[in-house]
Structures are given as C-alpha cells and as structure tokens.
Figure (cartoon, one colour):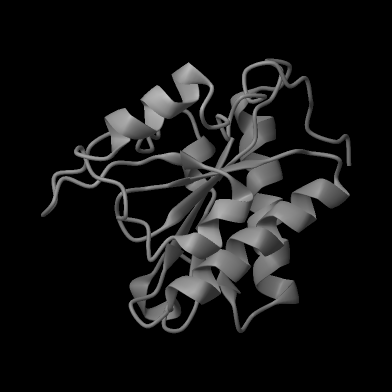
Length: 170
C-alpha cells in the first residue's frame, strides 16, 4: 500500500519529512514496517509491502482509517481531504492510491518535469540529507543503482520484497 504525502504549497521540506516520519511511527505501532521514496514531484510515498491476503476494499478501508486518524490527531499537520483549499500549511495523506484502478508513480519513474526528476527509494535516515523530492534526476540514478548492485551502498529497500506482513485485524 502507498500513503502519498502531498504537501501544500507552503509546507517546507523539513515539515514533509516530519510528516513522513509520523506516518512511519503510526505504522510501526501497528507492527508494519514501511519504506519511503521520493516522488520526483512535490511529495513522498510511504510504502508498506504486504502479503497478498487482503482485498481492495479492505486495503482502502485500512488506508482511509489511517489517513483520517492522522488528520484527526494532528489537524495542524495532516488533512485527508483532497480539496486543494484544505491543504494550506498541511500535508494531504492521499490514501486513494490504494483503490482498484488507481495509480501512483512507481520507483525509478522519470517525471515529465524540468530536470527530469526521478522517483527514488531512499533510506529513512537519508531524508534529512536531501534538499527535496526532486533531488534525483536521470543523471544521478544510474550511479545510485550501480552502488547498490556493487555492494558499495546498501539498497534502502533491500528487505521490501522479502518482508512478510499483513494489515492488522482491527
């Protein structure tokens, strides 16, 4: 599942990082490990690999509940309302990426924007060293991936494909 964190125009990068870390902590409290990636656009994706044991409706309900809880608990930081007018100074938690037929930019997708930014998996500890979600471009990504392949750098999503976890029952 993907929690697409879409910041309002006036939300600084550091506040977006804090928001992503809060989503991570909430998921951890439910015993779910999550991974983060830049979008190559304005935001971040917090992704949770799951065993294929849940239906579309169940996943939509779960992600909606998480988004609504975040916006209720921290209304100054989060909104679950997609209307642009509700995003001023807040991070929209887009849970609708998890409904059948929806899409989200995939890892290593190049965006059709100036500089050709790319959506890239990053380590949680790496977020503070980035200046924003468009830091990686088609020029840098091959070197990054070669570093992982050669063992010179750790793949931040190395456990993603082997992690076995399910959405909690309640």
